[in-house]
Image (cartoon, rainbow, N blue to C red; front, side, top):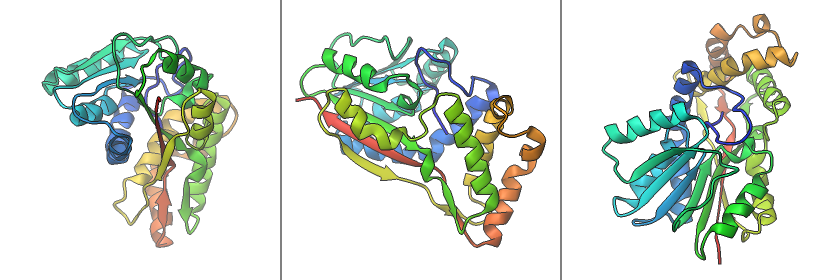
Length: 276
């Protein structure tokens, strides 16, 4: 349930090929939710954008479409391997106004003029997200937009409650929590902006609700759990044999369909504010 972060701390889900594939699936699943936040925040043609924790570039590419070729996007991520992938994607798409550099979000400096600082699923991984935003706000010019899109894992549910959904969600949240990830970062964006000295942000909550036999959400939750499973075992949260991850998505689908229910994966919360 997260994008590849760029921080001084390790990305708890790692950078395996299955995890990169999972991130690709997730990016497509929530792409329009993030685009809506960026549009509402005011990203517009000609703007220069800094994307923190860009991963393979999904949010950078959304921003690039909004700012157009007269604008520019610079994506920053701590993983050189992920940056190489983002560069290849940009080259393949002929996006000459998008660049990627390897670096730490907690240490990056704003060089030149920037009109917007953005990020998705990055602040939840930072040890002190307010301090990072405060430092960048001190370097940014008047009128710079700060736009972030984070999740609140506590909102995940099924209705009527499917036991496997509730259990799997508990395993996921507890594993993230013990790994030092802020599982409710989305709901903390208002306070984080204030602590960073930014103006009170406008905020928007959005979430998927899916049901029926063909919903992607069953696979979405199973993929997150599969990647987290080694950590969950290490923390003593659950043993792999109890999860039976290879059949998890199918069993979850069967429970939800039998209940004629829906699943809501974690909701995403966008927050944006402009420096005076």
